[in-house]
Image (cartoon, rainbow, N blue to C red; front, side):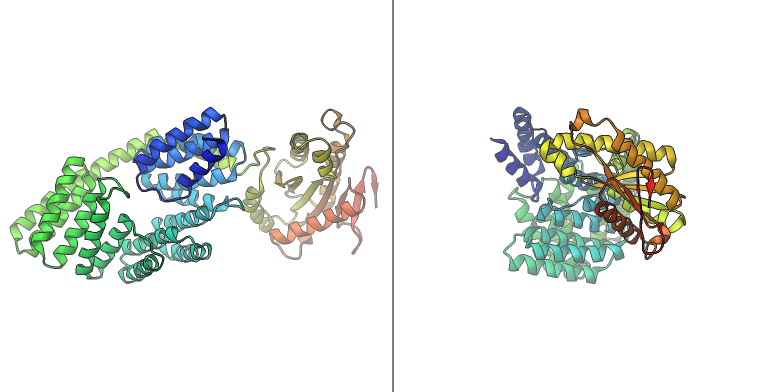
Length: 525
């Protein structure tokens, strides 16, 4: 398999719903080995991330978290936004399984923020869906509903018909969990109509969602037919492991009890109980005990119902105790993983090439500074004729110039304004933020930085090509309104003036009204 063929094969794993995680895991393990043979680090990182996701799906959450760390670290180091986004969405799933809904939501937000023009349609739908899921899991269903609706519209716009079934399934289930049964039924109805229109075979977990919603709305006969179809589909082996059958049989038993078909309900429940015992499905078994108590009560067997309710209560308390112990152990074992996650969170706010803060950090921090600091000054810095360096030398030489300029700017700024920061906005453009610094004083400091950059010994990196910068300065009081777009637009306008005036200079608005002031060397106009 060539690198191109392997990339396409990995995309098939990355961009589709995985039914049998264990089978896919074996395949991805082979892909990872092949990627290592080819010596392609990007393919290796992608394969490892796929493996992490599939391990999580197969129940090995700890193993998944460990591999996620490696994949995400590589993606941050190499500036691979797509891989970072995919890692965050997988982290969101992992944190949900750990019961940390706040972290799950944070990773879901990150996964959406990192989407760019390279994101596949499947990624766009899946990541937006995960954000809606995470909001619902956090108890913010009012905030989740618009997200589900937007994701539904996005999936329809992109004609992503199969992912759309997942969006509608998750939305319906979220409504069901909070007792909004009528809303859940309406979403489930749209889900079924969509599947019928586009000839999509609903997955077993989707049929189980529909069955549970039908039961909640008193549609017991319909629910029985739904669950019989679900179980028949399950037996084909294409969608999920055998452990899910106990869950489906339990839902079927609930539907049959609602129909007063207590003999059929008992048979379904007995089979579910047997599977729970064989496969040690303790959580499902607790709910089987609960349903058995309900079934006894439906047949008028009051003593048996009371006795089974006691069994249910004891099993529930025992399970909850085990869950608390497991949660405590997980927290203990994952302390290092959490520390790594925090480190990666910091890395996500830094530019991978220069190590400076990035645009994301600016968007998070600058609005609050603008609102709080009356004397805040910002400056946009642009390298002059940078394209010439890339074209005449190489992009590697250009990268080294960017790294060195970043070091010079950060060193000079922190010496003059310790509370300030430098960020790379993209390409050869940087932003300098100077808190509590009047524009006139900031312009003087920035002109010294300009001279430092020009005076650096560039010959080793660029030969005869000079390296200079132009700077546009703006104070918060000079912007049309106190907002980030307005302030940066004012600085950008002054940068244009500096460029138009001949480059290698600083431009601010501190001259007489209608006349910008520019600095070059020791001259001021």
